[in-house]
Image 1 (tube, rainbow, N blue to C red):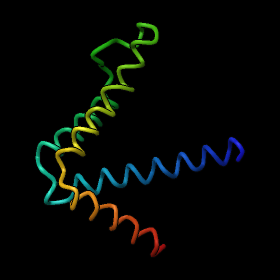
Image 2 (spheres, helix red, strand yellow):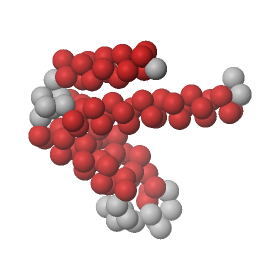
Image 3 (spheres, rainbow, N blue to C red):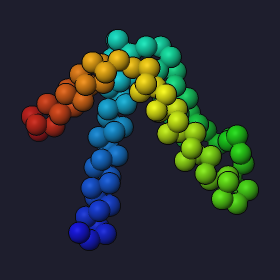
Length: 98
């Protein structure tokens, strides 16, 4: 598989995951703590300040690679499996209808 195909597959997967987290955020049975953790992850990604400044070589960039996945992991642990599966199923059925 060429680099272009790998990048296209990665971009497609990223779009699916963003849609999944958006569906989780909108779902009425998603706990407030999980919604707050999802918003924190998004805010940490987009806001210009960090816990460790980016001008510190290597460590400055690694904090995003640790903190954001950790927040997403904690949010998914709080959300019931049935809610996660329902959101995945909704997205899958929407993709099949296209």
